[in-house]
Amino acid sequence: MTYWYDVYRANLKMAVAQMLQYRFAILIWAVWGLVGPLISLAIWSAATGARSITNHATGASFGRADFAAYFLVFMIFGHLTMSWDAFEFAWRVRDGNLSPRLLKPLHPIHTDVAFNIAFKLTTSVMLLPVWILLFVLLKPTPPASGWSLLLAAPALVLVSAALLVVFLAENARIPVDDPNTHLELTMIHEVMILDHSGPDLAALQMAAALKMFTCAGILAAVLNPFGIETHPAAATVTSIALIAATGVGVGLVESLVARLRMSALPRYALVALLASVVSVGLVVLRGGNA
Image (cartoon, rainbow, N blue to C red):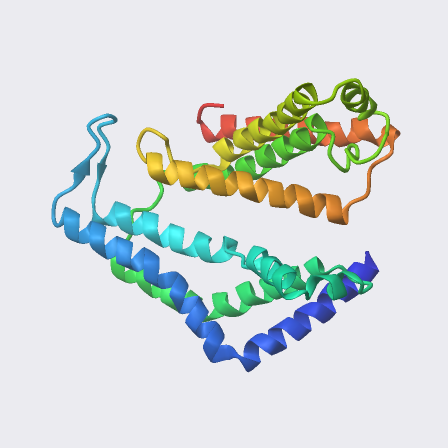
């Protein structure tokens, strides 16, 4: 633990120093995150005017203050959750810079995580006065229940973690098992493959791929903030992005984590069970539907 603390402290110091050297460029990137939500807010505010827009299916009405609350929260969370690491890795692969980085004692993902954290810290300090000023000027509608909002975030995180554990276990991925080796759990799949060839083998491989895609789709459905009935285009694009992000996450887990021993797998599955129970409890306390 001390080793990783020293590693991340050194990388964070280096990353913050680099951010401060290129502070004007960092400021441009930070301000860019304000542009899209503010343009959308201006369009919706102009469309509504002094009246409200009513959803006839649910009977809910939305005015300027409601749109201001939505786009301001979207602006902040979009800034805090954005990441350019996938593009960086793609550029390194194309440019041939990834292989030398993989030969170093420290995996490059740790440097990327440190730089991402440094970017969030540096730009958040720059944008915090702007966020406060926008909240004061636009007067967004506060949530109906602050306690409800406080419980919703950890419940979503816990149920997502539980689904990710189930995803890795159901598809025999690391750390539960290694699909590229002949180990205990994958021997069933290996025997199926050895006994088939041609179209039958392709069907078995396709079934495994469909199972993984379905599990990733379930996880994406939980995290997708858009409804397919109200926002079909946004829901579809977001689901595809979340499924792709799940695949990237599985790849990172298999690159950074070793396979667990068989004796540790029940405890690993217990983590998913406990996370699910706690998330259900939070939903019940929140007063929503499980």
